[in-house]
Length: 463
Image (cartoon, rainbow, N blue to C red; front, side):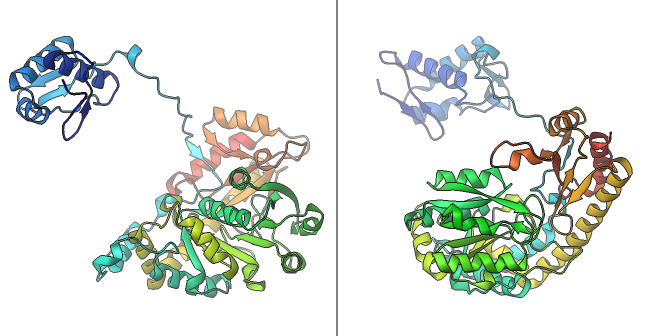
């Protein structure tokens, strides 16, 4: 009796000492109970399974008939033998973890309007990118990313964001969190132990840095951006900033502080990581160029397609200082070596063709209109609130009046009305009594539901 039977689709392990018929019967029964053969899945024909397992067809026929009689299998003419829908009793099934209920209206601050993804342009770009690709290009690529995309990004970032870089210094990665993880691990390998992050900031950023072995230090934020004067006393080795549009408060790093943080990096040998997460979306002010241009040797520039196209693409990029490039590539080779080559070609073509710029112009107008409608709704239904950080980006911080509802009360109201919003309190490094506010992302509701979503949000915020 073999220790296990294998056909082309399934590994069956009979119990020791069982005969062929009984062993196959018990192995199939266990596979159905364990869920390794799914409900409704069609089993091989008796002749095929007998040949694959090296048993007689009669043995397989008898086993199928027995399991049909027990309710594990069902057989219909023309449909073959399938796992019955009631094959596994509910008590024997592993309970699935309860998923959080989906909100009818979502104002997640990290989401663009994914229904506006330029699918037709993306497909055309993919076709153009693949046309004439040599077969060897489909093999393993260098970890920096496809040269077509790196050349397109270097030119675009220089033109639109003022980034001073070259294709050789651009590295693509699977989203900003992955890029931050690579940078933190690289800095840690170079001897860095502390990284400062704005307070408030995205909790996952702190978690990624801590997982890489870095101590995370809070850097307070005011109306002029991060308090970079605190870097000296913190003894930080690096700092993560969102200088163009601080997340989530929305302030812009002042010119004096931009110069000061670069001077700090030059004097101490520290590094600045610039997260330019939504630098393309500005409305009431001139665009703020990348901080990286002040010193490409000490500032890492990070951008992403998550806000401009869709988070599901998982395409981000880093413009690296030369001294960190090779150490980071050594770490990248050991994990996510490269992004899908075809996706990189498509994005490169989208940028080169001008479809990227046209999409940005269209979405910039749409998001500005949404922001204006949000402000108008607040003025009408909650005149005591303040909307902060609204000159750019895809979100606003809606601050409650001093005697208004608490974040806890607002979250409870939002749940009752199936509205997904985030409280500002979840972004601070540590719990403390602070102004009560919601972080409202106005990019995520689909256009055809935006008016209804605003009304529901007004029901949450209005007194």
